[in-house]
Each structure stands twice: as structure tokens, then as C-alpha cells.
Length: 266
Image (cartoon, rainbow, N blue to C red; front, side, top):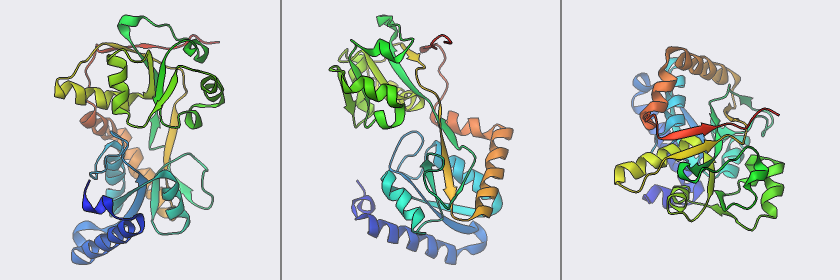
């Protein structure tokens, strides 16, 4: 862990503000107007604490045409919201729409695609959440808060359910046969799968089960005109194909490694 990340949050915030100010004063015409954006702590591949990731790159490139150069402050979700409410930052990322009053929400920056993942060799059929009963399930930390009341009610009485703080370890549990199902965001799975592939670790074909609806995540800004400029830049990224290029930079397409199963319509 770097020295900066080891400092108390207030010290890291002060450091980030001072760095942004010094850089802006040193080269005002080269970098444009500085913005400080708070975001969740590392959630690869969307946000990686080394100042990169799918969302970091999307936000940086969406703001650039309007002359903004964002710096990013990484913090727990609750603190991210607090800093925006207190006016300590210009914007934030990773909020559900409407979770803070009096700020200006962007168009969706990205959709989280939470899925259930099983080994293809196990041939597990999951056409509803209720089919999870009787299976060993490993989900991401605090999953019931994000995956709906039906899921929360199910796991409260599920003896084979566990939550994992380190999502990288979910893949190890699945590939070692220590769980039947893992539940996580699909591209987080794909990111860690690629890391395993590069490290020469065990890789097996899997099946994705789409049991959950997509969940949009937004940026929010204190100033309405910045929101409008960001939305315009985001739209240009999508129209030009650059948006998908950014995603593919972190998640190279490798067809044939997984199957997709979608529950039948009711």
C-alpha cells in the first residue's frame, strides 16, 4: 500500500486538493480546469486505485473536450457521498440515481451486470433465484443490499451461503470446487479470469446465469453545467465507438470461454 493510501482520509483529501491546485497553477493552459472527483475504492476493472480503470478512463475522456482535467479521490462509498454533500469535491461516481438530493446526476456511466456463475461441467440449471436453494453460493460482500429483497430473503435462511470480501477469491472457490455458484458483476469476473489466465492459474469453462436486472451507475456533479458537458462528452464516446474501445482495453474479448443462460420469460 502506498503512503498516500495509508494516510487518514482527511489527509488524503487535503493532499489530493493540493496536488490538483499546484498542477493547475503550474500549467493552466496545458491541462485546462481541474476537477476533483470522489469515487469508490478499487473495484476493478471499473475503478482501479492506480488512477485507471474503465470508468476512470471514460470520465477522463468525456470531460476532456470541455477543457476539464479530473483528479480522482478514492474512498468508501459512504464517505464519497458525504464529500459531495459537503461540497469538498466537484463530483462523484458510483451512485444509484437519486441517492443524494440537490446534485446533478449524469446519464448512466455504466451498467453493472450481476450474474450467477457456475462451472459448465456441472450443468447446473438456474432459471430463478429459488433454484439456488440447496446449492453452495458465494456472493460479494453485502450482496443482499444490491440484489433485491427476494435474494435477501432467500439467503437469510440459506445455510450454504457465504459472502467474500475479496472478489478475486470467488473464482478460486469456484474452480477448486469449494462452491457451486458465485455471484458477482460479470466484467469483474472476466477481469479476474484474465488475471488468472495471465498467471497460468486453473481456468475452466463457465456458464453465466442472468438472474438479476442490469443496475445503472451514475456520476453526480455539484454544478449543472458540468453535468451537461459530461453528458455530451459521454454521448460522443458512445457514438464514436470509443466507449467500447475503453472497455475492451481492460477486457479483451475471448469468445467461446463461457455460455450464457437467461431465464425464460414468465
